[in-house]
Amino acid sequence: MSEQIDWSKLSEVEKLKYDSNYLRGTLVESLADPVTGAIADGDTQMSKFHGIYQQHDRDLEKERKQQKLEPAWSFLIRVRLPGGIASKEQWLQMDKLADSHANGTLKLTTRQAFQLHGVFKHKLKSTIQGINAALMDTIAACGDVNRNVMSFANPEESEIHAQVYKLAGDISAHLTPQTTAYHEIWLDQHLLVDGKKDVEPIYGDRYLPRKFKIGVAVPPYNDVDVFSQDLGFIAIQEKGKLVGYNVVAGGGFGSTFGVPETYPRLGDVIGFCTPDQAVDVAEKVLLVQKDNGNRQNRKQARLKYTIDRNGLDWFKTELNKYLGYDLQEARSYHFTRNGDRYGWVKGKNGKWSLNLFIEGGRVKDTEGLKLKTALREVAEQVDAQFILTGNQNLIIANTNEKEKVAAILKKYGVWPLKLSGLRQNSIACVALNTCSLAFAEAERYLPEFMSKLELILDEFGLFREDIVIRMTGCPNGCGRPYLAEIGFIGKSAGRYNLYLGGSRNGTRLNALYKETLSEEEILNELRPIIAAYAGERTQGEGFGDFVIRKGYVKEIVHGKEFKH
Image (cartoon, rainbow, N blue to C red):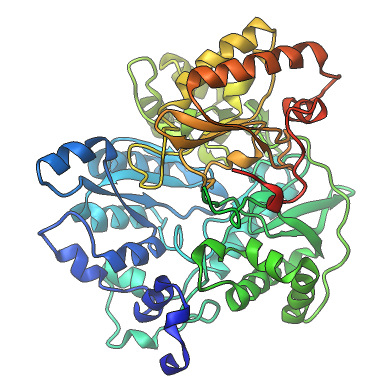
């Protein structure tokens, strides 16, 4: 087969994947190399399929160069956790691994998964073994495959929510790579004599052109930001029963400064499927992308570009061919918001769940807030689940010990807290100091910046107003900044592009308002807009709706119109 492929017309990663012997690469040799804290260049791509990113401490970059030392290498490990639900035992294991193998913190991601940061190469295998010991894994958490499948956070809210959570798990299991490389390399299972005996019935020997993301939403809440996904399912209810899903295709937010042919795009609703068709639809949408996605230019390789290059009608026709039947006409639905609902909620099982705000998704202890200690104590003393939301927050879920949970959290100053509506609707990507793509701070800076913006909001009586704010250190969109009512994309150290006009329910892209602004300039720009919003908004009008109605920015109908 290799002689039929003109590798000169494909990206280098395509050859790496093909030559990797089903994701093995030379990872075993890289892990055994004592000379460096890094792994071989080609293995940095292969390791992503195993849930690992190589990083280095950029705060120490100049100092180490002066000392003629290699970068301070470490690794990010991402757990695959469909629907975001962890048992108390799994939470305790991740808490323990954070201290013994990583930098002492847990990151709750915008895909409802755990991340460990600061894992050194010699601890990679034991960390992954520790994760697997808790009946979790990291395969396909990154890489050119389907990644962690998102769903509405708590299946005990209703029978429909339970069905949606099950669908997320079923899709994830069906689309998980079948290679045995993961178990061989990390879990020391018996190596195949010839790795080519592995078969990938869905992915083939080159996997997908790029990453692929799936999310399932239950109206009226769009807490998975379903239009940001390569493939989304919107649960449709009739008379209290789940009758099927509207299918959404072509979302995705990765883009690059100075490359106008890259842009964020919202998915299109392309039809409706029944519950028993949903896994098949997921497979066939993925296969259309596998067979037609751009394998020459990775910046043009996501499903959104495949659709825009060939046309939406072409995509629907092609999908129906792969399915062997036509999707039905889409059904009506309505979203009200894409944020989390904080506080206590009683489920259909009679148990209680508490949605907690976790700033930047970072679980750690600080001098003023012993969050990690508090959550560990809850896990040790209370019968509960730990559910990660798509907004970097946490639900202590399905417990009969409401008062005990509240007492522990109060003891450590974790809950209740007086938080602004702005802060409760915030997301920040990791950015500096570890992300190699970041131009500016995000997670470490957004809390401080919001404190200054909150003073302006409070001045105009808007402290409790829900306003969606998101900040990322680069334009790749990991924190879904392009859906924010106020969005920031890092342009350089201390400077950001300011975007306005996303909707509160995640159904509209924002638009560039001003670029390369300092903090002082941002606050000066936002102050009069906030003042106008306080005095001129209509009943129930969101901030993003207001700035479009008043002409601060123009509404973007399609991602191709987006400007950096």
